[in-house]
Length: 535
Ligand SMILES: Cc1cc2nc3c(=O)[nH]c(=O)nc-3n(C[C@H](O)[C@H](O)[C@H](O)COP(=O)(O)OP(=O)(O)OC[C@H]3O[C@@H](n4cnc5c(N)ncnc54)[C@H](O)[C@@H]3O)c2cc1C
Image (cartoon, rainbow, N blue to C red):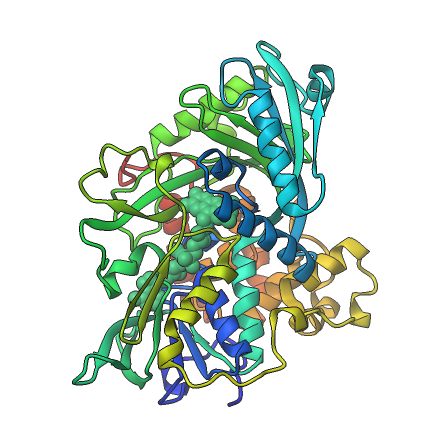
C-alpha cells in the first residue's frame, strides 16, 4: 500500500475500499493510534470530522508532564506512566518536546505545604529515576520570579517537566504515518458503523463534512478516538455513567509584559487549584480553568467572563504589581476535557476531582478510547490496539516506528541556528527536507516575534492538507494564537506567502478571510462572547 502524499487535495475518492483499521478522530489519541497501527504493518485510515488536531489537542496547556497534582489524589500509576512517557517523548522528539523548568512558590495557608510538596517531588524524581527537584529560599524564589507576592511566601520548589506544541505533535504523528503507508483525511466524519448479522463491525460510513458526499469503507475494526464526542459513536457501556465535558481556558499575553523563562505554578487563592503562567513560542500563557461545559461541542468554544475573572484574579494574587489586564491579552483558547462521570453525582462532584484516567470500551470491533492526557497518548493508543486485537489481522513487522522518525540532515538548513534546526526537525521529522525547499524562496525570517518562520507557513500551505485558512494559521503554524487579532493585520503578507501552495482565487481568499475573522472573534478573541456559557 502506498501512502498518500500529504498535500491539499486528498479526498474520499482517493482512498481504498477496505482497511484493516479505521480511526475516527485526528487529535493526539487518534494520531497516536494511527501511528502505532501503521507501525505494526496494518492498513490504516484516519479521519477527522474537522481538521486534524481541531479539538483539545490544539488547545491544551502543552505540558508533557507526569501531573504532580495527580499524586495528591493518590494516582501513583497514572503519574508514573506519565513520567515515563515524558522521558520517552523527550528522547524521541527533541525540538518538538522540550524540557521546561517549573517554579512553585509555597504560600502559608494556600495550597500544599512545603513538606507535602517536597514529599510529592521526591516521589516524582524517583519515578523519573533521577533527582529533578530543588528547594529555593524565599529570596532566591523572589529573584527567579520578579515581582512575586512576598506576603505569606515561605519558599519555592523547582522541578523539571516538558513542553510540546500540541497540534504539531498530532500532525507529526499523522504525517509520519502517512509517509509510511497510512491514509488520513481531514473534514471527513465517521458517520455510521455497519455491522453483520452477528453484530460485528463490517464497515464504516464516511461523510465529507462539507460536501456531504458519503462513502462506505469495509473494515472489521473502528477506533473511536473522538474525545468529547465519543458517545456519538458508542454510548457509554457503564450504567449510570456518561462523558462529562469540562472546559479549560487560557489567556495568551505578549512576552514583553513579564520576563519569564520557566513555568510559575501556584495555588489559586480562591480554590487552591494549581494554575500556571508559562512561556510559549514568544508569548506568555496563563491557565487554566476547570468547569462544566454546556455549549455546542461542534463549535470551537470561547472563553467566558467568569473564566477571565478567575484567571486574572489568580495572576493578580501572584504578581500584584504587574498590572496586566484582560485588555492586554492577545488571544484566548478553550479546550474540552472528556471525563467519565457518574450521572447522579455529576453536579455534586467538583470538576477538578473527576478522574483524568482514560477509558476503553469495546463492542465487537468498535473500540472507544477517550479521556487521559496528551502526555500519555501512546499508552492510550496501545490500549486501544490491544482491545481491537481480535478484529485485526496478525501484525506484521514494519520498519516504521516512533523511534525511526529522526529527521535527516539537510544542507539547506545550514544557515539556521542549531536551535532552529532542532525545532524544525522536531516539527517536521523526515519532511524537514520538503520544508527546507521553501527556504530559498521565502527566506529564513521568523513571523513577527514568534518562533515560526515564514517558510513554515509556505510549507504548511503547500504540503499539509490545508482546507481552510484557520487550519493554516491556528494549527499548521500557530500564529493565529500568537499575533494580535490572530494575524489579521498581516493578512497581505500571509496571503503572499501562502498563496502559491493553496490555489485559491480572489473570491475564495475573501471568503476564507471573512470566515477566519468571524471564527477568531467568537472562539479566540480574549473577551467573552454572548454565546460562551459559563459552566
Ligand atoms: C484545558 C486543557 C488543558 C490540557 N492540558 C494538558 C497538558 O498540558 N498536558 C497533557 O498531557 N494533557 C492536557 N490536557 C488533556 C489533553 O489535551 C487531551 O487529553 C488530549 O488532547 C485529547 O486528545 P483526543 O485526541 O482524545 O481528543 P481531541 O483532541 O478532542 O480530538 C478529537 C477529534 O475527534 C474529531 N471527531 C469528533 N467526532 C468525529 C467523528 N464522528 N468522526 C471523525 N472525527 C471526529 C474532532 O474533530 C477532534 O479533532 C488538557 C486538556 C484540557 C481541556
